[in-house]
Image 1 (cartoon, helix red, strand yellow):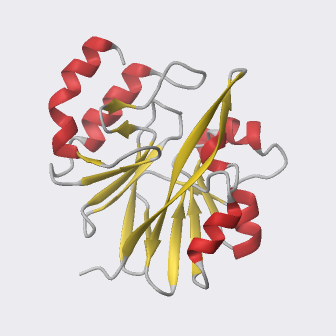
Image 2: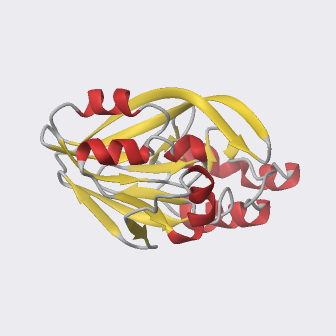
Length: 210
């Protein structure tokens, strides 16, 4: 049985892409125990994340994708904690829009397992919202961290650069809806849901062209 627990920090800031800017609240997820954690999506506010981490070691900063609102605090957090920043290579062009002079430290690959405090986060490459979007699935925790790929009520947005609606539908159908129905879905913004709650709506999303 895993000893890991999940904590949420909500940070606020702005998302900018294609010349538009929107105010957003982001979920930053900490997975770990009293000694070490993994940070999923270092959004907006390194101070708030450092405070939540406390004295624990940060084993890694995992980016579900490289939209600015999910990575803008990553270099500052890495500098303060000594942690490695992980990103899927296909999102490097998006990353460079926010951090032109600083590359991630390591590349996420499909099927890779990132371990901390007994948690085993398996990387699922789920392009569509962004080319290098990933989800992180831990069967022991019965949880998948979906970033902006799947929300309560539907897929992430695909109306902007680097995104593609048919691709996100394929990713959700093939990678996420294949998970057990009871799997908790912890998202990049907003409230949690489950795979079982979202699965029946796939055809409706396709019809809507969400």
